[in-house]
Image (cartoon, rainbow, N blue to C red):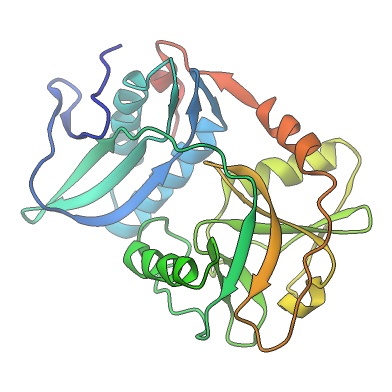
Length: 274
């Protein structure tokens, strides 16, 4: 396995020539990322499938070509340390290219303070990861400027869609709830893992489209591949107050998530199928 230097972008040329430098300016079209922790990854195939689907939907790239790139990228994943690599579909000089960005992972976050944007959802392609990155980055910066950690995105009718970098889940009594999947939100790999694990454990699962006010006092989670589950500890930016509920289940369910991680083996990329 040939490693990639931390912080560098590598451009994939083809299966025979592999990777070269990716230094020129590009336009990002789609991306995906996952946590590699001491050589273990959660649901790598699901991340691969999401990226393959995005590339096909955006630019009709054959699944076999995206799969070949992903296989080469997986071969370069480090087996020690914590990493958050990003695979990208970009335009460089008018040509479509695949890139791998090898990034060290920051520490796992412990909480999320939500800030609600005053504007309804303005994304263009919310179901494609990376397509609205500039807008989502701006939203998250506005949240940080407001003393929060994450921006909450609402539909025009005031109902919750997702966070700028997270999906939301919540507990009503002993039922784990989430927003239904659809074209207005990203198909979150971590959300899917949790709902499947809950169902397998005999926990009731429900799909809802609530307003923030309908989550008042409930245990709410913000989840993603980098930080796993973080409890929502504050709601800001809303006309009326919403209280964050106590977080009693995060530690146990983060352990459940951690148990889904599998080792990245030397030929892991060859196991990715379109």
